[in-house]
Length: 172
Image (cartoon, rainbow, N blue to C red; front, side, top):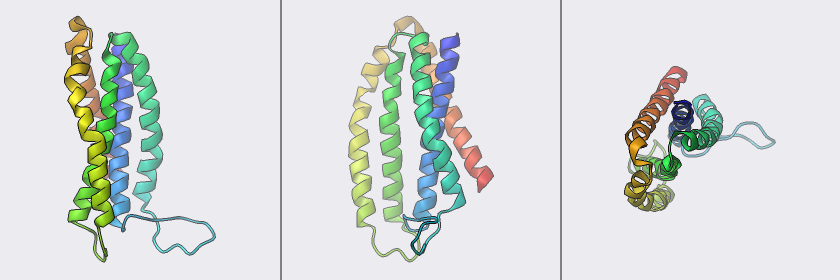
């Protein structure tokens, strides 16, 4: 049972990290795709406070969550750790979606979006093929624990996404 709890906490943190990064990226793209704070040069576009907080918490939470989830997966069931490979397509497909969405619907006063199209397509190509491995990853989980592992994984993903949405809405 402890393995499932550790796995749940780790996957929740990983999902929060990806969600926070997704929202933080959108906040930066809302101001044209670049921003800066401080330094010796003239700052033309400051970073939104929400982007700083989301990226500052999201990236470390995702990395720490991955390691916690690996520890829990090893205790929960043989093969459960393979599900963590789905973090790769989750990250790249979601961020690729952001690039394509903003290429189609750019912020006001945006000159061109060719770069966002290119990044969106490349990120999609980096993430989509990994989805082909899902059946193999699921089959590799110890059969008598497969349902419990998958339920824990799906619920933790949902919890991390909801946590990211709640924090994003709280900081506005």
